[in-house]
Length: 136
Image 1 (cartoon, helix red, strand yellow):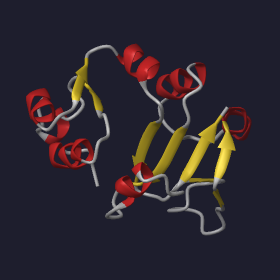
Image 2 (cartoon, one colour; image 1 turned 135 degrees about the horizontal axis):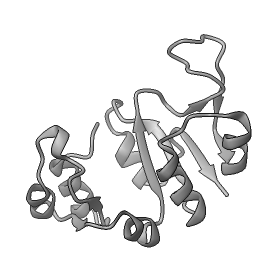
Image 3 (cartoon, one colour; image 1 turned 60 degrees about the vertical axis):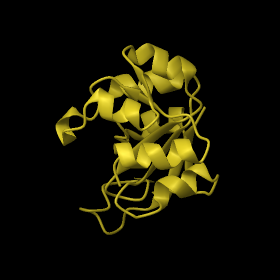
């Protein structure tokens, strides 16, 4: 499940504040106005997103962070939680290095989860343990 305007509407209706970086949906043909109409705040400055956020959600094709790529290595094991330092020490690829560094510098946890499993985003918002959490 991607962060579409309809998902934003569900989250804002449930009382959550949703911030979207300007232009984030363009590859999926969603413009900023679509997200705004659904109730999201559009932020032009990536730094502001990291300064104002409580958590960074990273949707992927797998259900968390593993010791190796689970799509290529059947022996890969999943981390329920891991520190920023351990991600770096183990050479794990969580997200692009700029986003990872901004999260680390702002002490923002990152939740890595399977975005294709229906209901996962809502479960995270409900406080359920889904995927892997990266903490300080």
